[in-house]
Length: 219
Image (cartoon, rainbow, N blue to C red; front, side, top):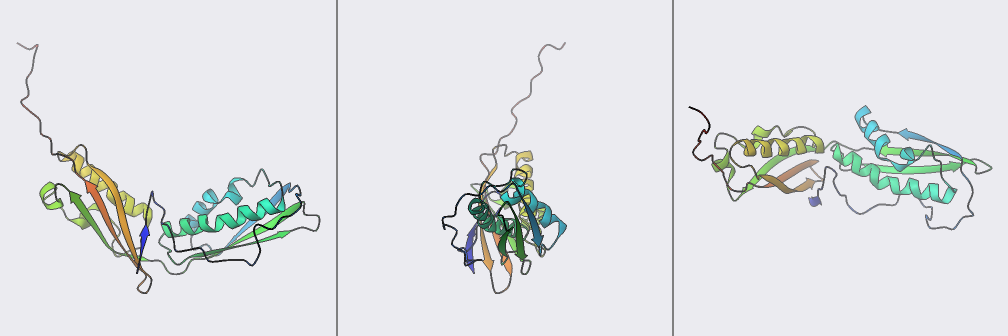
């Protein structure tokens, strides 16, 4: 198992592995690329395809083209890590993303193929909530870690895990802890079992209560 730092919905990964033998820093004469097409292969679902299309720079700047084949190649190579982040957010922690660029004879246009090898979907084995300074049992005595809707036993989806954290914070705020907030999480992936364990840290802040209620201006 290894630790994965998880920020706002996207997991960091193990060190990059080379997907191509091309030297990305190779100097090439600038050639205007008026257009290029992108083919995406191997995406495991429509939802993943939609997220890749929204995240990859190849798609986001496709209408503008690229000023040279070299810069287009750099854009494609940089998108490998972006693609892996998107796949990890859907629970594919062993995913690999490769790119292949084929310019036409005149190098005025090109075709870029993005190939996804998703690997297995990791299962969320556990999702623990650690509350300080007030414990979960003290703050929400009738609720447990499993009561916030985290997809334990299902795909380790970042969106679902974040939703569970938001639910936990909202319930605390509705139970007298208006300053409750999530302070981050630790995630451990087991590459042999294809599972993920997440611990979410929440600062509850002080419990506040209403004081005596007075009405003024009434007879």
